[in-house]
Amino acid sequence: NCNASFGTPAWCRSFTAAYAIREVCSAGLAITAFPAARLATTCPVKIAKGNLLGFSIDKYLGEDYPLYERYYYSYQRRTMNPDRILPDCLTSYLYSLYPFPWLTEYRTLFDVIMYRGKIHWVVSRLLKKSKSYESFLGYTKEEILWCRKNKKILWDWMVNQGHLWSKDPMIIRAYTHPDPSMVFKGEKIPPLIGVWMGMELTDLYMQQHPNLTIEELLSRIDFRDIRNVKF
Image 1 (tube, one colour):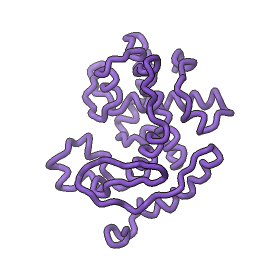
Image 2 (cartoon, one colour):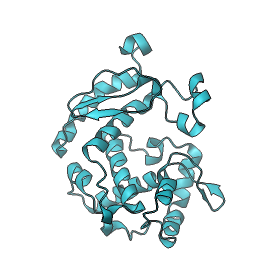
Image 3 (spheres, rainbow, N blue to C red):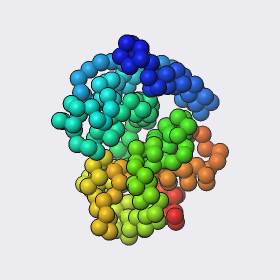
């Protein structure tokens, strides 16, 4: 009951807007229902099964919620705001529809960031959050500036270090984990930098393939024809 709990907040009204995402039916997707929020403990798990999707409403009480400050790190709390409900739900839904294949030949860092990047790119487009991919990931102004300033340098470094083709889980985690602990040239890299890079690459890929549908993009696992891109 949105009114009882939050006085009809923006995120609740946005679920009405989510039904407008039926426009993606033209791309072959079938998002048919979003059930009421499921109250739970502080477990952050979203559940997607068939055309039913549930989430724990108490994961989104605001990053300054006192209980969160006791049990979560700051990098975790930054995503625990009400405006993250809809993008998180749609992202989880698409992850369930298009799971990572885990094929032996497609398990490199490049494959992982392209998989996660295309999912986030699609959700950002569906929600009309096209002003910047950085803001969609919850980056601060300083982190946005860092990404734009260092994109080419970081990409060249990833290529030269051989990270893109690595299957080392620790290397993959460093680029895809929300903990901003990775250091590049003496500076901390924004969290989820690999996901951001994947969104950038997906956008470039779609520019190069203007006739590709959203469903075809989500179903595709081989993006090797773009790995030699020059930013």
